[in-house]
Length: 333
Image (cartoon, rainbow, N blue to C red):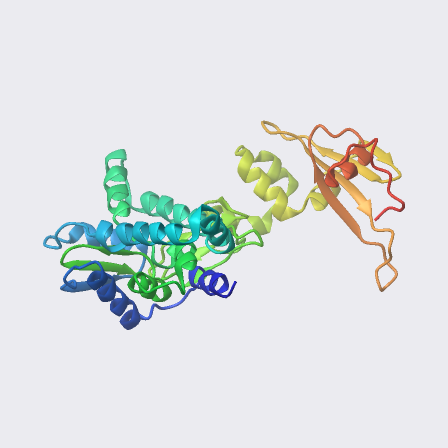
């Protein structure tokens, strides 16, 4: 668990890179791969800036990502697999890398997509940018698999040294390009990019990604969230953006200010339905906690349930993985 927590922090690290330590890691990775150290190390303020720097290289030689990253990783994995056996390797991965893989892989893919959108003005440009991205070593975002090997030998020490101290990097025979880390990273409890009042991920040169609970949104879209009205929400033609608006505005507030009427009431709560053009209905159950708050008030909760729900009891039961006939609480909560 120690290594998992350390590498989780690496993957989420923001702020200026330790350039000296990262460059030492690069040189060590080259030596461990049996290569001469690179003649030049070029720094960029973001992944798209790094891609541009790579495209401007004229005498860097071929990519050595295979020797520096792919081959050492494969050989170490084989060594650990032979040492631990299939069950042992599976247990090691489950306890280490698997705990980080989903969020780091998703973040890396979002960055790739953002770089392509930033730099490509045509389909032909997209292909060229993606080819450069294939040469990248992901630095801090390789945290998942580096966590699995930490403390089990130093073959990957160079790669780990770069990852702990910098962002993505591009290794070539005679030159290396390294990107700075983000200056800001905002995520929700599920690890998804999430911020309602600015970029969820930002780099020193202004390259940024905007998202609400993992969903990519335009920067100008976020600017309008503070002045939302029910009419503006209903007028939004993009169903996904409309969902974001509803979540930000609050389903209960939307229901109240839209003059909505309940569709069903019973002893468990009140069922509400919001019909949306071009999208499935939003169905909510309003329930009141029977245990009073310290000030004597009763707290109201809003539970989103499937659009097929027909009664409040069915909706509450669904949140417990039951159907309405099975659900018989001793008391409402």
